[in-house]
Image (cartoon, rainbow, N blue to C red; front, side, top):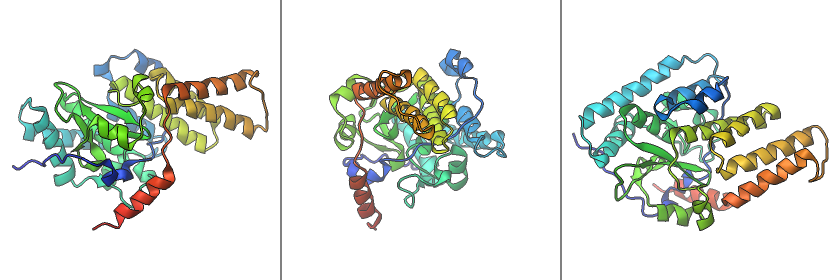
Length: 309
């Protein structure tokens, strides 16, 4: 079998449509304390994400989708056949996902607005996803195989990294069919300042437990859109609890608290307890080095890329 070749992503601008991928949004009755106490080996990312998705799709059978993830993992494992070579393992996952099963980035939804591009169950059904669901599936497969592939955050984006032993090109750009990209490329194209790296906000490898923060923050964003601010705040608070140094989570909390005030037609000063919380979360977000990407420039780039043959 000829394995899918990893393609160096020399210019991230050639796949800028991965920018601003909207996150998976969901809610479920999760035992946060149990997850917080759990050791890494007991946290199954696919199971947690599907439990979150079930609130939006209450009729789904979790076992059905977990069987699909298990099937993909077994197929990859069969190809790898016990090899310890990191590059071979990555190429095997890429071969199965993008060549055999034809998973792909949804070019018709560059902003990730379709509900089916926000949940792993829909990505498994449609074989299309974005910069949240595709890495989520990729990491879930690697986790089942015991491969040290973990999530990494860039501004409004997630990619994967083979952590140990480190490769010359350890970063895996899942939205670009598992291609290679250096930290320097992410820094340049996502305009990441040194401050954001030193704070741990971006480009740090996340543990599985820290990765749960992304799921919970996205649930908070979903319920914020529904104007269920208390529910949204609970999820966002847990996101911050699981990973305190994600600037987007702090900014989301500030917006949620402000939104609740607007919904109640209240105005408070910075001396008010809620006003202080809003101010503190904004300051923390900025201190961590929040990067806000220019959406207009991004959309123009995507438009040009979509017209290319």
